[in-house]
Image 1 (tube, rainbow, N blue to C red):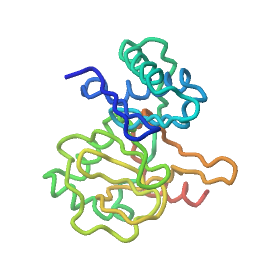
Image 2: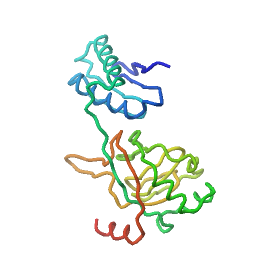
Image 3: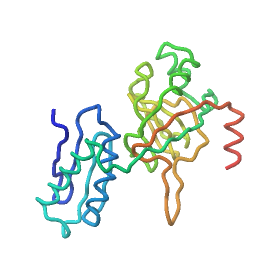
Length: 229
C-alpha cells in the first residue's frame, strides 16, 4: 500500500489521501496545516477529512505540474513529521444520560446486552477524534466508539432530533448542534453549544482533528445549565 495518493478530482481540486490506518486524522490535519502555509494564495481552501485532505486551487495562480509536485512533497514531509505546527485541541463535553432526555438509552443498552451504567461507562471512557465535520454546521463525526456499542442506524429516522442530543451509529458518536432530522440512536443530551451562529464569524466548537471526551452529569445539572443559556 502506498504511503499516500494524490488524485485530481476536478480541474481545480486535488484529493490527498493517506490510506494506511495508522496515519489517520492526525497526519491529514498536519498535512492540511502544512499545505495552507506552503500553497498560500494558490489555495482557495484546504479541508482535512478522515484519511485525507481536499485542496481547492485558484486556477489562475497555479501551474499544474508544479503545484502537484509541491503537494506530493508536502505529503511526504507530513508523514515524516517535518515542519508541522498543527496540534489538536481537547474538549470535555458534559452529557446527561437520563431517560428523560435520552429516548434510546434503554433500548441501546438492551440491544448491546449491557446495563445502562455499563453503556455510560463505555461511552465516557474513550478519547474520540473528530474525523470530519458534516451533515450540519458543527456536526462532528467522532470516532471510534467501543465495538460493543456499535449499532446500525435506526430503520426509521426521526423527523426532529433536539439540539444537544448525543447519539451513536455504526462506529461514530456525535452531538447534534441544531434541531434537525436524524437517524442515530439518542443516548444522552449535552447543554454545550456546538455551533455559535454569528453574522460576522460563525464558529464551530469542534474542528477536524480535535479530541473529545464525554463526562456524565445528573439531570438537575443539565437542566440548570440549559436554563442559564
